[in-house]
Image 1 (tube, rainbow, N blue to C red):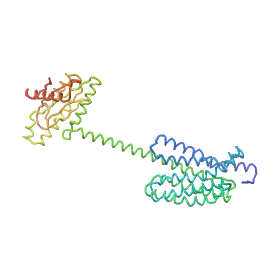
Image 2 (tube, one colour; image 1 turned 30 degrees about the vertical axis):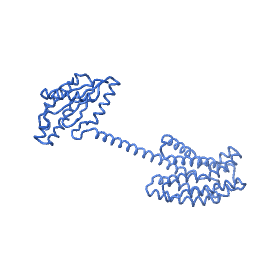
Image 3 (cartoon, one colour; image 1 turned 120 degrees about the vertical axis):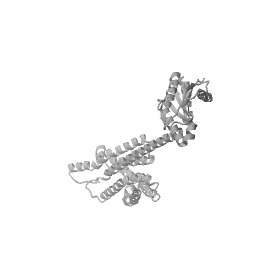
Image 4 (cartoon, rainbow, N blue to C red; image 1 turned 180 degrees about the vertical axis):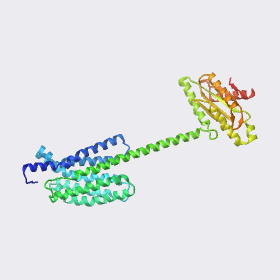
Length: 406
């Protein structure tokens, strides 16, 4: 390539021709860095899309360096020779790498035939490289076919992206500006170079990197949005699981816990005893003469009394004290051991509160049997048997009283 002009004008043109490269190179490096960081912190994301995008940007960044006229001025003749061949090899790789990104976006679309587009560019590049190795200047000669193929081959790729975007594919919509800009500027550079339209060999294709930057930002934003949706879905599932677990452990009539909860409380209580030597106690409560309420006023009134009784019991409980409906009109209060006197006082407080409170319009009383966990030698069956005996003793003593199991 020969240029005719004053020394100052030629040197100025040399530097001016590198302006697009200078504007694009930091952006290309930044995109590669962003993609690698994004992939590192989220390896479960779009793996291939990230990989193909990094590959394309790596080829593109290498191609940018090869377009620099200033580097040739600084590094001398050997750099010009190297960059001459590298520029053309990378030029053949560019559409292949770029279309791999589009291929990944359209892989689930039956109408997209990106394999044919990639194959056509790959075949042209292989032919150019093979001819060059055989002694022909095919790297330069095949450029006569490169730009027509670029114009023809990218049209269906862009059309398929537009079609996918109309179907709601957000990533395909985001890649369209980059694909259009790269294609148009690539064609402009090709025809400008072929017909010597400019005084200097200036490539405008580097500026298309800003279109790809928009696509990369959109990828990160879309992935973050999906992660937020996934997190919200996980939180929702956890909430539903908690509600389902609560339904399994809560008596629907009284709102107290049921036998399922008691099983887990007993297991936890035995575990705490082994680890901390901290025992527990149970109060077995029975509403006195409850059958008369059902017989006299009906089961609907009986259910209302049960709900009011459970509420009255829970009002006397603190943290780590649980009210469980054992069955019928019988309830169990599970208490983490804080001393036997404290447990007995709690039972007496519950008895007095029930006696003093009008429950669903009725005055009722309850009998309470108190039993304590006796340690490793004790079993759940023995615990319940002692609780039954204590409650039976309270009934025999005239009801409306508290008895401790022997």
